[in-house]
Image (cartoon, rainbow over all chains, first blue to last red; front, side):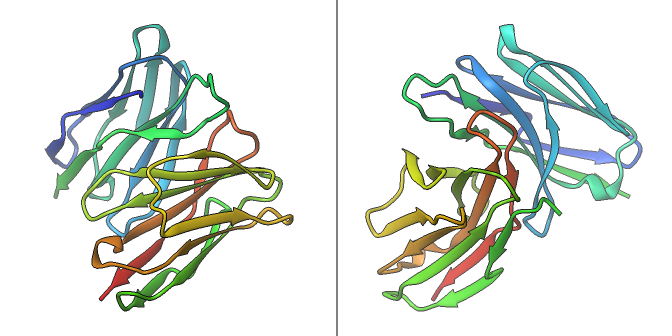
Length: 112
Length: 112
């Protein structure tokens, strides 16, 4: 099955710093999403980005589907950005299944 | 608020017991997914339903079962519970099978 690798596994930033999180897929995926899991466990949709670039405030994401990776950029980080960031993709279905496969996450801690 | 409702939010039960977790998808969404997240782990796919039919199974234990009802809500039944079943259980829904998925707030199950 498809493997999803995220890097770095852990990241500590000072408030105001910028960072780039990466997600690599072992095979082609149809769709790709980025999520933020806050300290209370809630999964929040950040981006639905099968390809191209999107921006939402201080966050932006780029997916290069042909090279099987996606990047999440966080600029001017804030303490509320702390948590775990997951990417997830749906495999190209040959058996009628469309499950999202999650990476192991990047644990981010932003210090005041 | 993602629009996906999971109940209960928290559940504490004893080993050997049976519990039912409920998921109400977003209005109009036909596809429902269940995921398990054990402590400090990634999200593991359990099962997917589409318009009442089971479409995909992941690493779901035989002690676990699920169904999607005609009104599209879904239930995940966990029986003969063990300490290792303690986890955060997420439900997600999407309009179709090959589109963006939205996650509920999760049910935190503690088996004592």
